[in-house]
Length: 195
Ligand code: HEM
Image 1 (cartoon, rainbow, N blue to C red):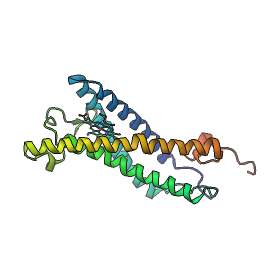
Image 2 (tube, protein in one colour; image 1 turned 30 degrees about the vertical axis):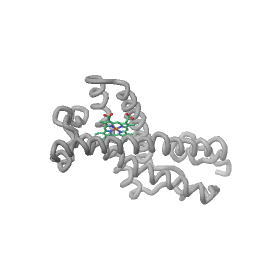
Image 3 (spheres, helix red, strand yellow; image 1 turned 45 degrees about the vertical axis):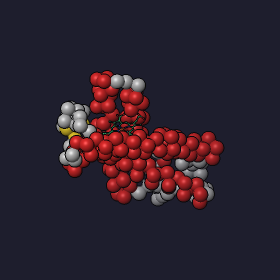
Image 4 (cartoon, rainbow, N blue to C red; image 1 turned 135 degrees about the vertical axis):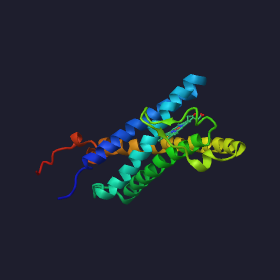
């Protein structure tokens, strides 16, 4: 039988990662307007959420091999399939690259010992040793460079991939009126009149 929706694990991972992404971006934006201890407190929460997103994305990729995604509808034009697949692929890359650059930036920070990546009070996520052990001057330079890269890559997700992904989903739901969105939100599934 043709698979008509994503597996329950894939659906749970998708919506958990989406919710964590919104949360951590809102925290990053909030931190922009703050200073001193208040800024640090908000960023201390931004970091473990970002690391969790990275781990869940890795799990999501592994899971995609275990349980492949349902096939895309035959009514979709080749360019639509290519665009959707490219956006998914880029999402996976950026959802790992953005936390990775955040982790690297913090590892090169002079403040890492004072403010480690505290995984919700459970344990401290380790720093990346080669960055942590750089001479002070170089560490500072790397920290600043990685901060620029982190912010730039995050912008690609926030202003590029997320809007494209949501617009695609809305197009399927309201213009094409097909069942594509129901693969990720099963309660939207329309009953097949022939069934
Ligand atoms: C998917 C995961 C992540 C997203 C989407 C994300 C997004 C962002 C964004 C949008 C900003 C910048 C806000 C601005 O323009 O000022 C930011 C800043 C920051 N991020 Fe992340 N981040 C993620 C993961 C991480 C991780 C894993 C860490 C560290 C472990 C981290 C550490 C930081 C820090 C320290 C800043 C503040 C830099 C500063 O202004 O001093 N981020 N992040």
